[in-house]
Length: 283
Ligand SMILES: [Fe+2]
Ligand SMILES: [Fe+2]
Image: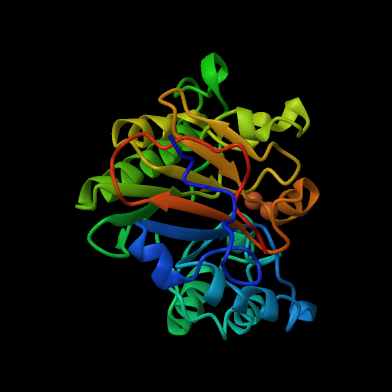
């Protein structure tokens, strides 16, 4: 089986990845994914060239939230500027930092004006073979220690907010008519990809209630951020590969300067996706 992600092949472009037409002919869609680059106003121009490389290296760019530091409109405008030269489809969810200033709606409008498709429960079909569903996700923890809806109203509100995210992800996955489905989140859906962070904060890094629809709809892969010092890859109980694509983590792991590249095979779409010996070429 293949992880979607395959080692770079000979005879390809300067970074070892095959050109888009070749990829499509051989039944592959290449995803570039990154989260948590946290643009501040002083970062204008910092990532522009790196993002522009995705035009040659990938078929679609996924942004896994925490695009900004404090979620101000000025910071969202910087993000839009960094993406100015990207011509492939850009799909995004927001992260907690993007909500900090209470101006997420203004931020979303800026991103949409740039042409970014916000996957906040609204699915996206790249073509008839592969589609994308995403939500921010939320906190609550993992396994038998998951926060439960018991006690104070405020506790129940947290659990309800998480369940609402799960429900919206399920609905978005159901709306996709494509055989291959990819999931984008900000918060982690499994514990394995937050390992490396202090154990005391695991409950604030994600919630494994998000796994149920991911496994039920047999997603090809999941990309998330938020746990900057977590673990790069893991798997759901159902075997779906999960990648923590926090920007700092990609750099520390040596799997991408700006984003991680992952190939989804379109032949045999819907079949389980496995991981190769080596990760795909990365920027
Ligand atoms: Fe972050
Ligand atoms: Fe975050």
